[in-house]
Image 1 (spheres, one colour):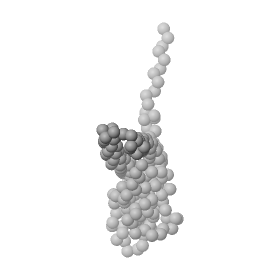
Image 2 (cartoon, rainbow, N blue to C red):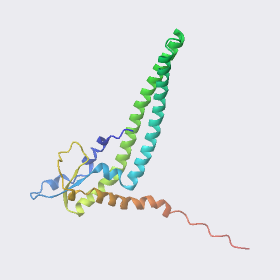
Image 3 (cartoon, rainbow, N blue to C red):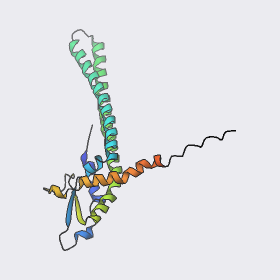
Image 4 (cartoon, rainbow, N blue to C red):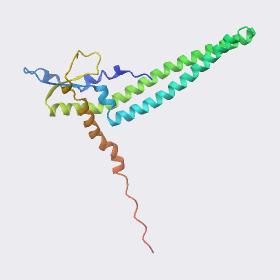
Amino acid sequence: MLINRKCVLWLSAFALIMPYRLLAQSSPGKIGVLHVYTAITQNAEGKQAMADFEKKATAKKEELEKKNNEIQELQKQLQSQARTLNDDSRAALVKSIDSKTTELQRATDDAQKEFGQMQNEILGRIGNKIGPLVQQYAKENNFTIIVDSSNQNSQLIYADPAIDITEDIIKRVDTALAPAAAAPAAVAPAAAPPAPKK
């Protein structure tokens, strides 16, 4: 369905860039490059969320294609039977085509809005978890600034692959979020001891 990468552009502003005071340092600092969209969608949680998203999007796409096929069949029927249909039957068929076409357009618009919001929610939710980890990584590795290479509006023209930290961030995210995913299983109540024999 609709994959709008522009919805990750705001992530650069909310914590993926080191504080402005670091930019004021007189000596040139260490710069890193992070493909934010990849960092969000290629960690374990992001992959699962995007897989669920794609599954729902595919189902909706098939539903819309089915409606479109119904309309095409009616249009073929109208063309093939144009000479044999009486005025009332022709008018009813035209009305049905118009009605189904309007319904399809509304369903398509609703789907685009729904899946756009769904994707924004995924990117925002996981992006909020990644932000602090990127800041921590940057401080630990003495980066002055980290640039989002997935931002189409950035002025980044070229970056040495050696300064790309995307894979490091994905590994860090998976390590940081894995305990949280496993926590429910870890705190599961122990099985009750067998009743004493009488």
